[in-house]
Image 1 (cartoon, rainbow, N blue to C red):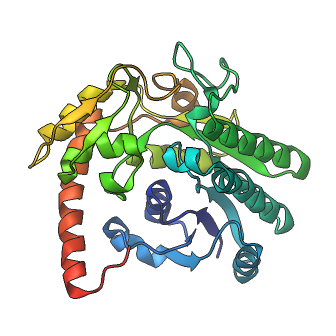
Image 2 (image 1 turned 180 degrees about the horizontal axis):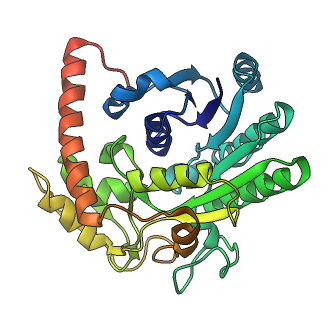
Length: 325
């Protein structure tokens, strides 16, 4: 029996990648620092093995790969996202994004894992005037987060070249959805989607004039799985995002529309991120058959239902003493 290893398997994207792989009949190892019981994994748990550990701890990794010598591929998702957490403490954030990836690449080399998919970011393109494409726009990060993701991309591609590993890279863009409440996400999502959770103090210093391709995590995860499973892809790097562009004020209004307790959102003038609006997904459409299945309104509406049910679920678990996040 062979396994697909999903690092960061309890995270927002990793848990949905695990879900789609398991639903397709794959055996999955979910590797993370903590196990999070997501209800959407309930009907496919028989296909998932959870292993606790850190991608920065060699003892954890050696134990993992020794225990499971038949890992056929790795999907590497862990990262510190572009947020104050990164800017305020850049050294450990960069270590996780770069060295964490290097450690898994080295495991793939040592243990002869044939396929490696790295989850990068559209941040590697930096600020562009149009929607950047894999073949038309150079890697030109505009901040430290983007530089860390670009560095890990180059490492992955060269490991593939030198050691015969089938390396693939996906570049997602500003994804959100079931798995994390708005209060658990980066400040931009906490503010713009905070009405769904009834949060207070929803304000950003800038952002009123910015539009981005906010992507539902189900679409991001599905595109990632397509990129992993494609036999002999024509390219090694694929943008996985939505073509629909949404302004910060419009996303906040959608959250208010689907909230039982809509809250005021204050956005200062200008842009918050040095980014293009969204990514060109032409290659993923042609090569992988990837088509986003959710409009932004459908995504927010479905996410609103999950937020409401998740808050009830956690409240019940806290009352019973069973909940630990």
